[in-house]
Image (cartoon, rainbow, N blue to C red; front, side):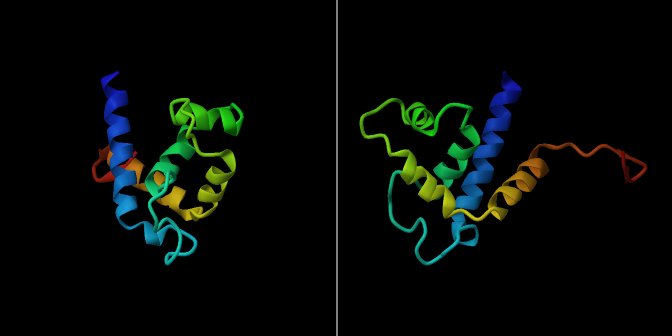
Length: 110
């Protein structure tokens, strides 16, 4: 359980780091994720990773705690489309760098 919390903490740190320079990872850096809304860059990136196999509407209710002011599935799809695909590659690489222990044998990777 402790390892899970550590990994989640590392993932949130990576997303926060990317959120600080979010203009590098969006389609239109002058317009996308500039206003305060329910779907911010970091939360959208994290929520994409949390999606399970249910319908998008049900997943949105689950993510936002079954509240009446839950954003629509359409708004989530629109927010998700503003994030460039290489943002997920960057997140993957950044997370692996922070969590993977490199095993070396005489300076070589095993």
